[in-house]
Image (cartoon, rainbow, N blue to C red):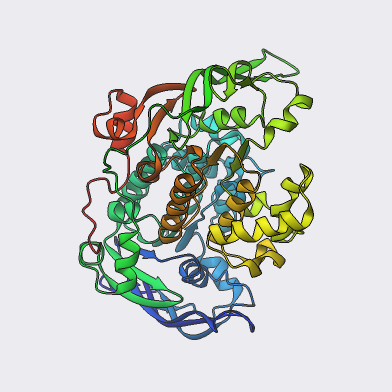
Length: 544
């Protein structure tokens, strides 16, 4: 097939994809048109439900039967693949178009080692000998900058970090030099330094291979870092498309201006706080060591937290930031006593308070209501078989509150998190991600805690919903005078909510102090490197 050098890699013309009967709208996307040229990166942005991932699945031929293409065309290097048979799509996947999925742990096969999964692409699409395939697998693993290629190809997905798994996914996508690469939220769950490495890797490989890239993301820092052009989707409609600088700095549509106004800034002012407020949590010398007991060879110890010292006063928010594996979530889980610390003290109520660090589980029950946690994934932390009402009243009822009183309080809490009381009789799957997170916040507040722990509670939310939930956390903290511990890998999020900041690296707190001081004049080299890695840190967003 002859391809003209000026012909776009991908042409989407008037694409319309239907939604099932009974949905809140008739189409997932409606008459959407855009192109991706050779060597060009086009970013699709918009809120959850805007149709970004549906377009990507449509291009790859991965749409379920319930979402048929009812209009328009999809052309790959001039070839119409809109309704191509499955046999033709299989020929095109990996050879001319490839996709990097959002969650590599879900996309990779847990019972195949990583080398075999890359090799499977070669076995299906080439006639290379086993030795030639093995060499090509090792070459692509080196190209995506994974250490110790021999060990990597022999490892299973669960043995690798999130960033390493994403690199394996990129290796699988690029091993046959496709002309189109679709990246669907490939850095959402990664910390800033790993995210920066993955973005640089995608850019380098894209330039080296000359591929066109369709990049789907809700992170405007990432858009500022990688995009050539930006397409903005709202409820299935393409409302704005243009160069990165035009869309991000001179947005024309009200919806685009709203999205950009919601992007948190890395620059923050000093927040007033009361240094004499009573201490709610005092952590001293906290240690956590995991022991990997093996049948053969030496036992391995992982020091996840080392001599951690923290303090939170009533009405204040302490943020903990750091890379994946730095110990952030380990510290949070020790404080909530979801895991047992190895040493140290965790005092509720400060110096004279009760130490729960090594307290037997049987004595913890009366104290658990004083500390509540909101997890990263609200769908996994809510029971799909229980209504919202049952989820919220379970804790108070277990602690002796009458059912009628607990239901009345549940209604008040839903109002506090800006949800209608009618939500009480519905189930988790009937809500959006942002709404489910509000339900989880209401459930935590039902226990009337003194300390609220948020463990990556907004990392999976798009920018506008994230802004709403962050504002909600602020209002709740101020209204209830709560102490909050906020765990995040997103520095922009930390800058919005934290009074005090602790920076963790390899289990240790390497910097600790007022958030405005840590952001404005970081002292430790690791903190400076962390801030330098934040995507789009120097980009001037407009529209606010």
